[in-house]
Image (cartoon, rainbow, N blue to C red; front, side):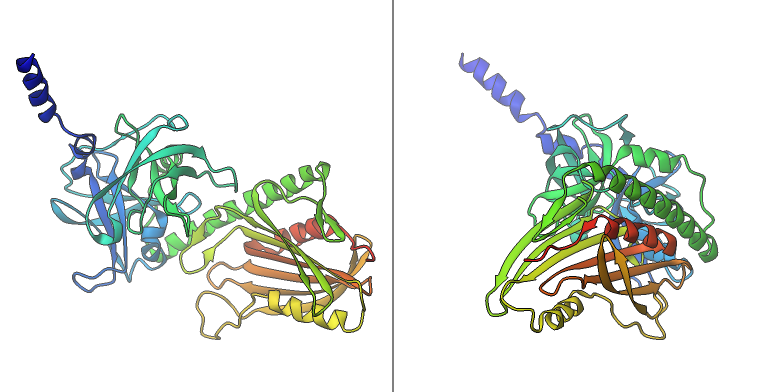
Length: 420
C-alpha cells in the first residue's frame, strides 16, 4: 500500500499543472504589439497579438494599430516575443469587428490553430496578453455566449482582461483559438468581451491593402460607408417591427419601444421646489465600432424626458428650455481642428404626432470623411401649457439622409403628452 501511494505521489508530482500545460508550446506564438513614433524604447500604443500562419501573419485589434492606419508615414509597427523585436507590416484591417492582421518576417514559431466555431455555453476558456506591458499573462474564464445587444457580435466572457491584453488570443480547452480579446466593461471586475473567430476567418480571406496614407484612408471610408448603410437599414427595419410591440410609457407620454438592440434605462423624479414631475427613458445602441481620432461611429442615443407641472404653468417653458440646454452635448470646435468641422446649428418648428415641436439640430462634419457627421437633435413639444416632452437624438458617424430617416422614425413614433 505504501509503495502504491509513493508511486502515485511521484507520478502526480511529475505532471504539469493546467496553467503550465497552457503555456507549453504556445508562448513563442504570442506577441506584444507596439506602435512607435520614432523614440527608441518608447511606444505610442501597446497591445497583444498571436501568430496564425507560417507566413508570419499576426492578429491583433484594429484599435491597437489605429494610429498607424491613420498616419503610416508618421508611425511604425513592431512586435516582440521571447526571440526579440521584429518589424511588422500591416496586411489588412476590419474596423467594424476591431481586428487587424500584420505580416512579420523571420518568425520561428508554430501558428495557433483556429477553431471551427465558438465553444458551448459555460465552457472553460483562457486568454493570453501583455497587461500594461508588464509581461505575458494568462487569464482563465468562462464563455457565456454572444452579448444580446447591438449589431456587432461580441463574445461575453467572465474573465478579468486588462489594458494591454487587447488583440491576444482566447482559446478553448483544446488550445484552439475561439476569439480575440477586444474590450472590458468599465466598472466591472471580471466582465470582458471578445471577437468571435468567424470574424477573423473572414478578414484573413481578404486581399492585402496598399500601405499608403491615401489607400488606407480610402479603405477606411469604404468600410465606414458599408457600416453606415447596414446599420441604417437594420435600425429602420428594427424600428418598423417594434410598431407591433407595447408602447413605452414616459410620464404622460407614449413612445414606440426602441428595438432590443438598445440598452435602455428608466428614471423618475419629483422636483418639489419646482412643482415638476420628471420621467426619463434613455437608450443607447451597444457595441458600436470606433475609428481612430473620430471615436465611436454608427452609434445612436435616444433620450425621452417628460415633464409635467400640476400646480402652475408660470415659467414652465422657461425651465424646460434650460433643461434642454443642459442635455446638449455639442461642443465648439477649433478652426484648426483636423478631425471635425465647427458645428452648424439650425432651429425650427414643425408638427409631428399631433404636436407642435420646437427643435434645434446641430451637425458636426468629419474633415477626412466628407458627408459623414455627428448629429444632435433636441426637440420640445409646445402644444400643452403644463406638460411637455423633451426628445434628444444623438447619432455619430452617419450621413444626412440616414439621420433624417431615423429622426423621422423616432419622432413619428411618439404620442404627445396628455394634459396633467
